[in-house]
View 1 (spheres, rainbow, N blue to C red):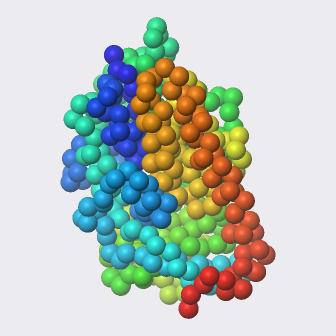
View 2 (view 1 turned 90 degrees about the vertical axis):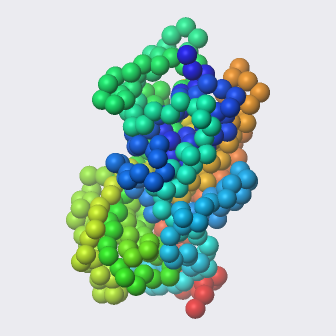
View 3 (view 1 turned 90 degrees about the horizontal axis):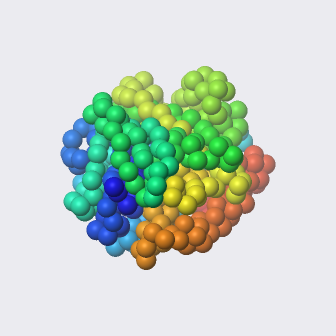
Length: 353
């Protein structure tokens, strides 16, 4: 009988397990094999691997320091903004840690107390209510397992199975397919590039240098000619000097974009959501690590004084994230409305040469 079962060992789930592992009996599940920090991944996380300033602030708040072997070249201090719709380009100062996302997640898991039971790779299937809690079914080493717990925590991202099971009457955030391909690039550019083109997506696309590779990604609407639009994106970028001939690998994942506060769902008493599973991800940039760390810290502090009544405390503490999502949505028109973005870029405000 566990006190808490956490589904998902990304930044949200791993940080929560790290913070509560010495006080409660915890089981942590993830579909990736994250036990060995240096073992090759069987399942890749589709992520640009940039640690934004808000996430850096949370790392500092948690009293952590990122090992240098997690960082990759080059470190980035500028965002190149390419507006294909309006044929404009600007450079803005911005500070990112460029990192290996898989190593980052494994490092977070390595910080968890040995008292936490970790079962990787494991796939959560379902749960049923029992006296005093829940019985959870999951697959581990190709066998179906069951475990009993007082509380279930969903930290399983935009494809959260737990959210699907408990939020049947709740509106989910707008979902996109993130397609990302890696290309050989011996001379990487020294900035992160954000690309806007309403004919491709009402969200955005990106280029990220990473060691000797260049990552091209795009957040696309599902079932809306995604492959064709990704191909058109490459064709439009080729005249700007980008070479997409030597592809190394391809990744994909669903990402949420919460456009309304009603899409932000913290779960219910006994079955609670954190990170992107709750809809805690930036609707303007799709940055999620800072929200993962913030929401897991909120939940850890909520249960620090006991499991009784933890959910009301958690809901109250998450109001700060709820307000932040509202402000991010108010910021979106300046980025995603073509005319407003054109005016902002043509003004040159806050740009650098």
